[in-house]
Image 1: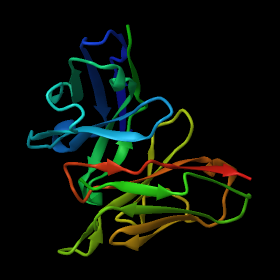
Image 2: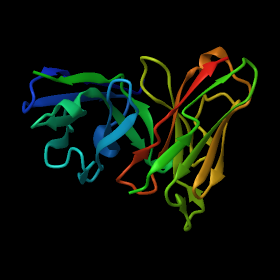
Image 3: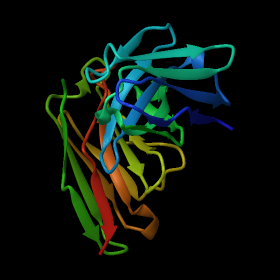
Image 4: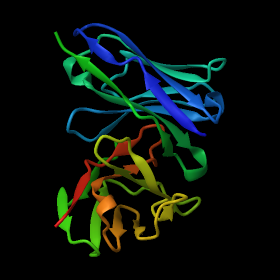
Length: 119
Length: 114
């Protein structure tokens, strides 16, 4: 079965760091474009970052310089390293597969992991 | 950056009736080289992740009921639910992927039962 499972969320103080993980099954992370999308409580979806199969990475302006997307091919896992966290980073973070066959629509989503930035 | 807007913010429709959601992009998402609109629609039910419904503006994802249809081109798009069912209560988002790798979602439209 094709699925994504996120982990690593939790409560962190402003200025702190957290690393999210997204374990994939049923397909190979390194052969696909993979993305992170977040959703603040009661709000809409905000694209955060993408990593291409070739390794290129891109970020939304709101997280550029603070967040780093990466992957571990041996573990078939996607990561999001989040540094210098702010209250406005509080959100559910979803990982998603970017379906190049559909243009670049996001066809597979994880269940999400909650990140709360608060003192 | 391409900005996506949706209307209405919310709507309530009787069971079996039609629901129509509009999405507008600040610039065309029609790629001239392949004549495809780089736009997708997602459904998000409470407590669940988004689910891809439609891509290329009008192509239903596998397994999506045919009461869901997408239309439009360029900057103006519509998601139609032809006969609303109870399980369709959700928030619906449009997304452009024309400006890949910078993706943009619309603010969402909440659909309820009247």
